[in-house]
Image 1 (cartoon, rainbow, N blue to C red):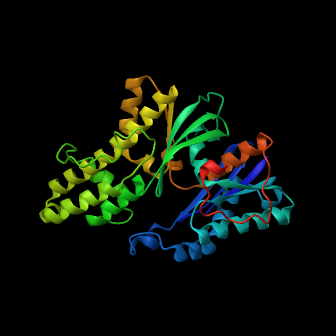
Image 2: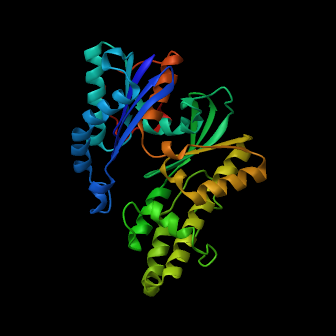
Image 3: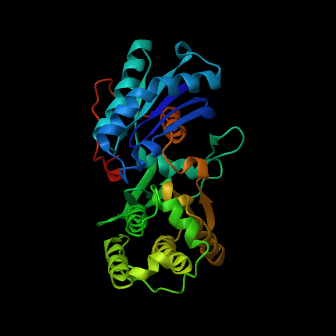
Amino acid sequence: MLLLAIETSCDETSVAILRGGCLLANAVSSQVKLHEKYGGVVPELASREHLRNLMPVARQALGQAGVTSDELDAVAATRGPGLPGALLVGLRAAQGLAFALSKPFIGIHHHEAHLYSPWIGGEPLSLSLDKFQPNVSLIVSGGHTMLVHVAAPLEHRVLGGTVDDAAGECFDKVAKLIGLPYPGGPELDRLASEGDDTSHNFPRPMLRDDSHDFSFSGLKTSVRYFIRDNPNVLEDGQRLRDLCAGVQAAIVEVLVAKTIRAAKKLGERCVTASGGVTCNSGLRAALGVACEREGFVLRLANPTLCTDNAAMVGMVAHLRLANGGETTSPDAEIVPGWKLADI
């Protein structure tokens, strides 16, 4: 089966081509430079840029895969959650292509695509579930932080999520507070790697809470007050690096502790992590140490598949079709607030 997948939920335009669940091409056009001067994604500009980029990116993916659109057997796209205008561009393009070719269309949940991305590997990249283990999965993308129990392929249960600011939002907002360039998360990670994470003892929100929920707005506020009371910290290179290290240590400790606690509580021996924040070097290292200590198997999404991409969307679409899942109506609407618990 030859499948084309589209991802346009936020600020990356991506098209992937898969044959039999193996990735042939994954073209991505980023909008970082466009939104950089605004310090964050501007939804209307993102939608316009998707309109401008989608066809060139699709042609690039088809060219890399060495196939034509007439050969396609199915078409998939992210249906939600995400920015309404951005989602609409990709969804309608995919639906139109599927209708024109008289092929099935599959609307995919963006977080479900992240959920299975740690199982994508090999050469060429493919979704490999032959060694699947029930697991507790940490999804940490820009605006979402959640823990999910995956009992079997396509069988999952949301354990908890963000009650205010997500981990990615906290990284980005703190980075903006201290004047780091957009996107701030990766730059904060770089500076943190050169700092002393014991120099500042910032709060670890809900760390001792028995729930599986997350809250990072209090941490962000604590950093804001610290900078207000210590303005010179931003002018001292080493103190700034120590500040970044302290913030990162607080976020990472909460993410790792709650993930490990959930796995123990459910009796699972496998942990996975995905989403853009999973690129953070501190988080990847801390998860590795914690899982080795507990004797857990750890699967981390490939860094190239942590940020938004159509490859992971296509993999889940292939998985659903291969397991006899229902296709999506060509008239289906976007679902910007679609909850993972609702699929």
